[in-house]
Image (cartoon, rainbow, N blue to C red; front, side):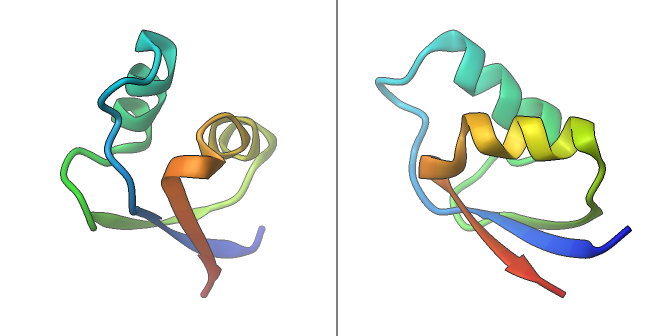
Length: 59
């Protein structure tokens, strides 16, 4: 599976509770926090739901 780096670039303020929980499940709490993960179908779905709040880069 390919690895990607996901970075939170926008705030979750004024977004739905579901999107806030998705960011929390991805392990992104503060602005500009990032995490390297191996892509799988579950993570791809989570990233797709909050893609407007994230920056995704291939590693």
